[in-house]
Length: 146
Image (tube, rainbow, N blue to C red):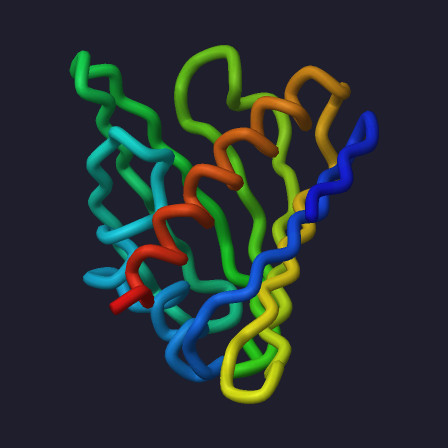
């Protein structure tokens, strides 16, 4: 399920794995390379998983276009919650930080992922991020299939 407003979005997805494994997929740099960019993109990840620690996701499209998402961890409560800032490094996108909060809820051995991304400057940008996160969650779901 997806809910989008002018300044936020909320996506919910059921992943067929326990919360500890899904939390690890969200915080381990090697596992992030499997899913943390939209479909059709490659990704490299650097993670300093501690309050105040930084992360960087380097995404590369099939046409060679590069996107870099960076931020700082604000909340780390394994395996239940993760909170961090989100900012694009590319010129023109560097004027605002947004906030991502991810909840990992146990649902009989599966995990209900509830992703909230907020503080967007407008509905257009929130919508684009909704599309990107939906694609990422599609990839995450595939990581745990089979």
